[in-house]
Amino acid sequence: MKTDEAVRHLRMYEMMALIRQYEETIYYLFLEGIMPGTIHQYQGQEACAVGMLFDLRTTDYMTSTHRPAGHALAKGVSVESCLAEMFAKASGCCRGKGGSMHLGDMAVGAVPAIAIVGGGLPIAVGIGLSCKMRRTNNVVVCFFGEGAANEGAFHEALNGAAIWDLPVIFACENNLYAASTPIRDMLKVAHVADRACAYGMPGEVVDGNDVLAVNEAAQRAIARARQGGGPTLLELETYRMVGHSRSDACGYRSREEEGYWKSRDPIIRLREHLLANGEADERHLETIEGMVIERIERALTEARNARDPRPEDALKDVYFEGVNRTWQ
Image (cartoon, rainbow, N blue to C red; front, side):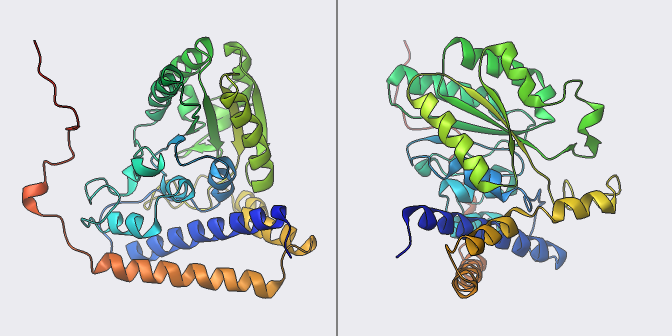
């Protein structure tokens, strides 16, 4: 019988494999000219999404970036609705109106992603303030990149969350490059997390390619937030295995650097942990990987055959229509 810990680790492995398979499927659909729009992919950063969101409740919230698929899937948005969204279908998580940079589903606390760099930071603080004022005991995880840490929104958000002791966990996915600009050219301090002390909150640097390390840090920050301890800044050191977007050939990176980070592939590292600690054998992991591939293929077939949005629905869902208020 598997221990509870082994079961948790296997679920993390399955989710990371699902995110990787989803992203690679999307990549080839673009190469073949089958899928419309554009993409900003997440391969290599799966441990950040899964480690941070694994212990969140459905009633907790998450804000994302222009690279949102991994975040959305880890928060509980279905792969079927994500793929349908990529094909601009009515069954998509945003009814086909959001596309790749706006994945999300409020039903599971995944705020539709915001493509503006740093745009999610103040929104996460607003959600955190709402949680505190309504005494819901919910928390908010706010993902952003190290490039966004140099935006004014970053400093305003951290200051606001700190002075009001809000239940917000700022998760900086430091993949070393803001598009093609290396972090050494835009940060004077050694780490983004060093800035936490300026706002009176804990700051921690975490190996973002180790899902177990990320999850341990996330658990500490979540517990602190739920107990009224206020916000935390976590810097997750990671690497995207692909370019910033589909047109980026990564000419600004050396092959040696890419090789180093490939050797730290987060999925392979968890796989090796599972095998070394007797939490799974090769056959079990291959079964999980096969199930993931089959699920993606079913979802893809469903998405391609789904109904297109109706022209008469084009203006629906653009503005919130849930409150009937008479202005005086």
